Image (cartoon, protein in one colour):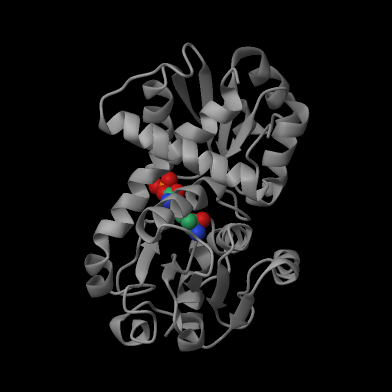
Length: 302
Ligand code: CP
Ligand code: NVA
C-alpha cells in the first residue's frame, strides 16, 4: 500500500491491518504511551474545502507521532491560482514525507499520487472519503465485535460517504443497503462492483433499507460544493430521515453513525442524534486513531 486514494485500492487484509494498528494506537494513547513512530516526518495538508475533524485529527495525529503537519489552504497555495497539480506534486515531494489532500475531483488526488513521489492520502473528494470510513469501521468493530453478517443501512444521498461506505462494508463482509431518491444513487460503477462482490440493496424505500439493520448511517443532503442545490435537495430528500419511527424496523441494538457535520431536522432528528451521541462522537474520535494508523503504514519505515 503506497497511498490511500480510495478504499477500492485496498485489500480486505490491508483494511483490517490498518484497523488493528488503529486499535493499538488508541490503546497506547489511552495509557499515555508515547512512541515517535514518525519522528521528524512532515505531512502537508492541502485543503480546498472546509474541515473541522479532518484538519484537527491529522494535525494532532502527526504531532503525536513525533512528526510535523503543515496546513496548506488552497487559497494561499499557487494551486489555487492555477499551478498544475502535476507540478505541485513534484515540488511538494521534495520537501515533505506525505500529503493529505481534501478537494473536489478525485482525479486531482490520483494525479497528485501519480506525479509525486511521496504517499498521498485522500481527506475527502466528491467521490470518496476513505479516512472517514476507516474510522467508521473501527467504531463498528468496537461496538459489534466483528463485521461478518452485519447489515449496514445508509439513508440519504448516494454521495462520497455512501460510495466509500458501500465499498468498506462489502470488503469487510457486511451487507449494504441504501435508501435514496431516484437520481441520487451512489456511483454506478461502484454499485456494479459491490453487487458482484457482496449483498447490496438500492431502494427508494427507507424502511426496506432499515429493516433489520445493525448499523445505520446518514449524511447531509447537500455536500460541500452543492450549496447552490440546497433548496432542491431539501425537497428531493424529504422523508429520507433517520428518525424514531423509521428506526423502529431496525434491530433493537442498532447503532447510528454520522460522519458530521449533522443537520438536525434534515437527515437525522435531534432525538435520534442525541440518543446515539456516544457512538457518533466515538466515531469522530476514531478519525484520529485510524488516520494515525494510515500515516504510520504509509510514512513509517516499515
Ligand atoms: N467528517 C469530516 O470529514 O468532517 P470535517 O469536514 O469536519 O473534516
Ligand atoms: N458528504 C459530505 C461529507 C462531509 C464530511 C460532504 O462532502 O460535504
